[in-house]
Length: 96
Image 1 (cartoon, one colour):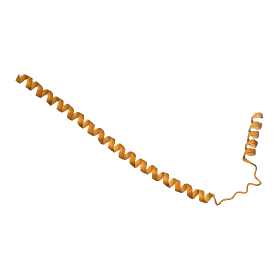
Image 2 (cartoon, rainbow, N blue to C red; image 1 turned 135 degrees about the horizontal axis):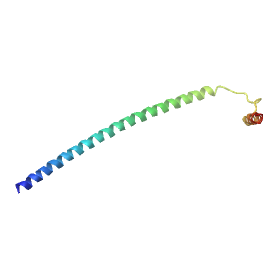
Image 3 (cartoon, rainbow, N blue to C red; image 1 turned 180 degrees about the horizontal axis):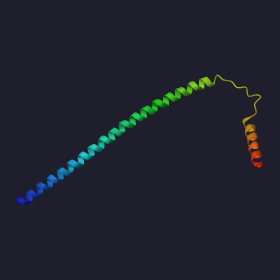
Image 4 (tube, rainbow, N blue to C red; image 1 turned 180 degrees about the vertical axis):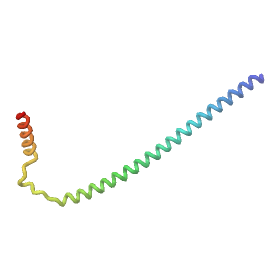
């Protein structure tokens, strides 16, 4: 009977050691997840700041560009410019 008690105590000790190791692994994983979460939050904050700055720069650029006025009354349309370019490309291809 004392052998059985000794065996049970040994089994309990082994199980306790295994549980301790598993708990340590879980703690390490939780710490890694926490670190990754903090890094992701910092990256998201930096991205939000960069987006805000880019938006402000875009608005500033829009204000500057809006000051320029182009006289397009004597300019060919975009479509006719594309057609001229296509015609030149076709002629150059036919010459080869």
